[in-house]
Image (cartoon, rainbow over all chains, first blue to last red; front, side, top):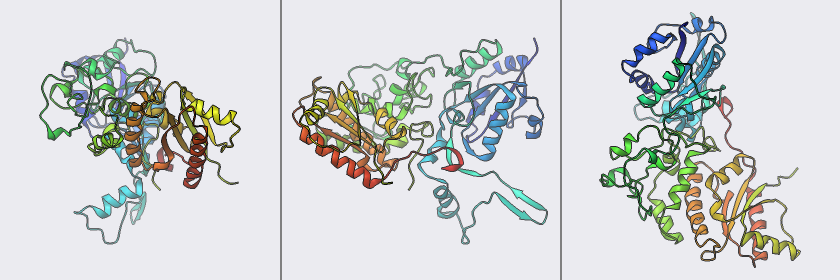
Length: 319
Length: 140
């Protein structure tokens, strides 16, 4: 059998997805046996022009991590889509926008003001901002255009599969790679995980009746080790998050923050968790309800931690 | 042309939809801006529904249910009370004006109250102007 051709790319991301890809350990040798890696900026020296020269659909699968923040990322996403038979959104940023997607609470001007003017360590009296092109004696220098809004990969190009997670767990990555190597990929559009039900399904904590009268931030209490974290008043989002990760965070006393994305059939992860959370608040008195809600300092940022660009509203409305 | 707001109203089957019906059979006049959607209980109104309405082109969303204590399903409307309170806090972070989403209680006998809420909401949203969510990419 001819070797597969695989490309890996990073866009607006932190580099954690590359670590996650290496996390599969010696299985990487099985990947190397079955596939040639033709493009992987973090590890091998292949230039954009080399990819450009490849025939269309000559790459069997592209694992694309990171959100689309600027014109370079969009350009490469489009190019890799052309060159690849299968496009896989790898990790929360490509899937739903991820942490870089939280920038959608602001627009470009606000972000530039913060980064190039307001930050305490910045000294920029002339208010110089990055320009997409600049003339120097040697010629013209260009940098990519920074977009107003962060987009997900599937808002940019057609995506065939999703490997969720921030970053994806080793077993999730391998599940997808194994299916690719064996030619047993699931139907297009599948979010590849071991469990398409909620994280609670993976979690070993004891669940009873959920009734919350006070919401705590993580640092405020040391949770009981065996009881559901949401029942203890922590904003554990496992209830509205796709499983398959084996719930490592709740097992380590940390509430789920929702990185595997919404459960099957849900469009808006944040609204879904909001709905579940509000349902278990144990009060029917508007004032008391408001008091309990006041203990959540940042509902939008907490509930859409990884999914703001993929949410129904895609971000804040900036007037 | 002047701006006519589009308002999606979720009405519970047992109280608010009947209240709206009463307004109709009593020939009360009411702003024509509301698109009613009947649901079995205001507790059926997931926060996604409100967001979906805004995403799909509504300028405002009304959620109407039975008065507290009167819910046909005993406490569906209390769930709504909590959900909308939390949703409104989240929407304010997303730059959405408080007046665009409104929860009110309308009983089956309150046709006049239905009319006044609809008229009031229509005027409020008219003042706010049209709503549109963010686009992707370079254009905002």
